[in-house]
Image 1 (cartoon, rainbow, N blue to C red):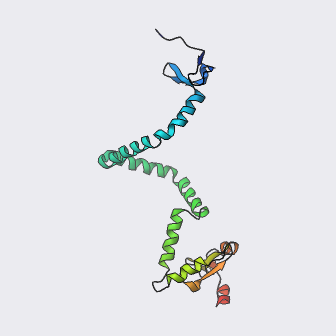
Image 2 (cartoon, rainbow, N blue to C red; image 1 turned 45 degrees about the vertical axis):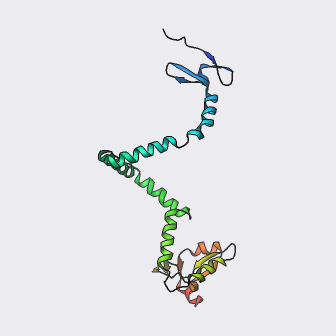
Amino acid sequence: MTKPILESKLCKNCGVVKARTEYYKKADTISTFCKPCTLERNRLAAPKYFGKYREYQNEWRNKKYSEDLEFKTNVIESKKLSYNKNKSKLNASRRQRWKDDPYNPARLHHRRKDVKGRTPSWVNKAELLEIYAKCPKGFHVDHIIPLKGLIDSRPVSGLHVPWNLQYLTPEANLKKHNRITESELLLLV
C-alpha cells in the first residue's frame, strides 16, 4: 500500500503549511522540513562537519595512491589528459597571473633567485637592508642597471649592490621596466 500524494504539508520547523514543491524530494515522499528551513539547518550544522569528509577522502586517496599501482597510473593518465585538453587555457591563465599579480608565489620565487644570484658574496648586506629601510614612502627601490634587462636591446645583468640602487617614483619605475639606454647610463656616470 502506497502513501497518498500530499498537495501541501506542515513544516516541522517553521510551522507553516506549504505546497509540495516547497520541499525537497526524498525517495518516494518529501522531506520533513521545507527548503528554506533545510538550507538554514544545513548552514548552522556545516561548521561541525567542515573538512572532516575532505580529510577522510584525502587520507583514503593518499593511501590508495601509494599502495595501488593501477590507481596511481590512472590518476597520472587522467591528469595528463586533462592538462593536454586544457593546455592552452591553463598556460594563458598562468601567463596572465604572472603578468598581473606581483605577489604570485612563482614570480616571487624567481625574483628571490635572481636577486640572490646577483648579490656578490663580498657585498655588505646591512647596507642593502638600510637602503630598503630608508626608502621614502611612495617610492620604489630600483636597480639602475637591471638584474635581468636590456641596454639598447642587448641583454645585461646588473648586480644587487648598494651603488646600483636608486629611489624612483612608482610611475617612473614601471615606465623604465627592465630597460636602460646607453645615453641614460652615461648621464649617471
